Length: 202
Image 1 (cartoon, rainbow, N blue to C red):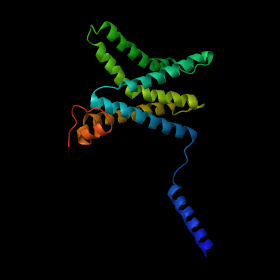
Image 2 (spheres, rainbow, N blue to C red):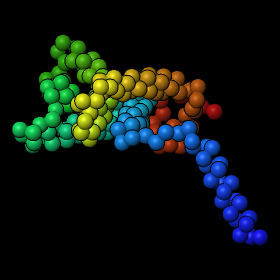
Image 3 (cartoon, one colour):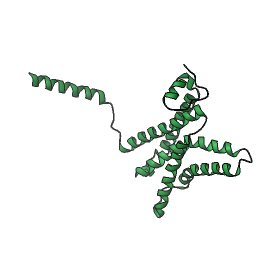
Image 4 (tube, rainbow, N blue to C red):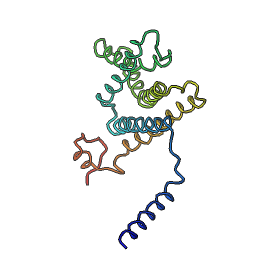
């Protein structure tokens, strides 16, 4: 009797699983990588955009993270010599964080005589948030997918990664800027963050 009940329960469980997952298509290797890249981009952009909206700045550790990623890709590609995989556009994109850092150093050492370099540096930092990260994710997809160069939807996928980054960035910035709607000063304090100027107390 016990064996019959066990077999019946197992069969019922298998049937439920079949009903629940029969409509779910197993993603191929490229789809899995694309989904993971989208998650990576969204998490990184959200963090940066939220802080930009709440504190009106991009924290230095986030910028350094992007800088390290770009340098790692550039140096790795450079070491391949005749087998380099990055084109001129990709190399230019990877140099953007280095150019931003150099511009910041220039302002520190020589000042902002034209009073526009600080704005340019801030604009480049903001641009990194919504363009550099998705392009980096696309390059990683390009490097890890052997046939992506022949994949007819590769460019739309790159644009879709950028669209995801822009959407998440806008939402993150707005949530950070209007943090008082969802958060309080205590929420920031408990999490170990500084308090934004516009947070509200209980």
